[in-house]
Image (cartoon, rainbow, N blue to C red; front, top):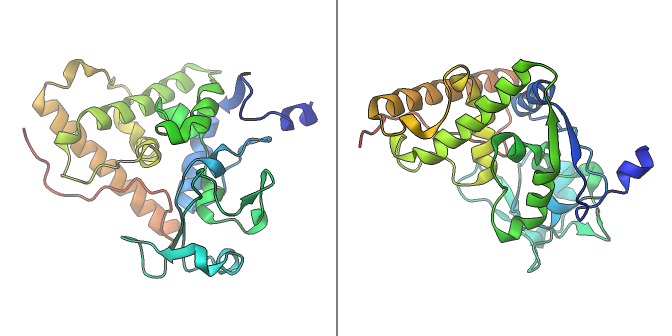
Length: 251
């Protein structure tokens, strides 16, 4: 059975078991808090390695940096001093990916260890456009289970968070809401509790007072998550969904 699962590829159309939603949510939030490693049964899929991602590598990742040709590394803009960024080939492939596998897997960057494409399924969004087509196929295949009503409630809250943030950027400080789907999904995972028992439909988006209040709650939830993360780890979060606290704008 395990061998059969491991032979699955990105081109299969069968559903993939994503696990119990509440258990997965707890684990992925802990991974984000501790800058840990996501437990994902990738099988033979390497979609994230071939989908035009820039890879940021922190200065503390010495083992990783020592295994990458320096000519492939460049100073990462708007990142902590010493952070490097590695690009991708014209086909979107990571230069460390060869022969269908990662050639530095045991020393792969932290950002790769944390990657879990189920975050997009959880948030109800795609990973991006055409260059993320293979990942989007995987995202569509994941199926969470909901043993209890709480599991369903949690998933609705995560989706509601991602939907509200996407639709109501005007309510947040200019330029402070993540533009990338990865960062948006992670932010939704960090602040989903704002939407527990509050719903998340579009029917109240025209209510300025509601939008401003909800945006403020999201900012507070994000600050609390980041404060806890700083307590647990001093390393920067590679795929952060950070938003700075400023005065909320009204329309």
